[in-house]
Image (cartoon, rainbow, N blue to C red):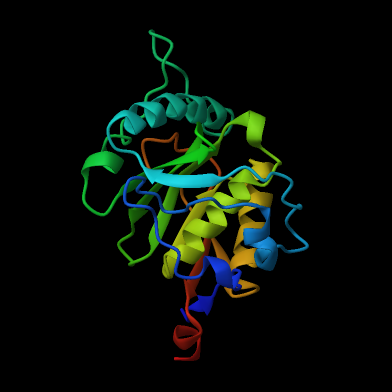
Length: 220
């Protein structure tokens, strides 16, 4: 797949690095940051609070683990999960994203408040897969997820794979819009069986594949 450059960000953000005392992937992202990535398929960004992505180490891991229960509850509508006797949803793979090389757990922060999280892992084909993406309900439809997703994709050039259930209409609309905002029409979609331990009778997952990169990569 040919890498396609993300739409350019404002020059004042080019080369910006996290402050040493606050190791973040994104610092102080506001409405103006993503004007170049807005697209007719995506709604307008209506929130201007700083959005940051931080590796979920230490106490941030605890915050992410709490949010993961909300995520599993949301996904139970589409995947059929039921809580255990203690009322908690199982998430057996979650520890791997903190401990296994190549996997990553990122906490999305809205100002100083936990706002959601992103889990990524490498695939056998060499892409980075977004295995889970969650934003709390109070911040949905306000551009928070859009900012977090676009900056993750555009700040890490390479091949990406994103899975979702077509029955989850909000996720389907969101990820198709994100793909178009990031790389235009240079993405494609496939369907694949849902891997175990999900129930075997579930509809196939939809997968979006795209590559982000520099103009040099696109011209190669």
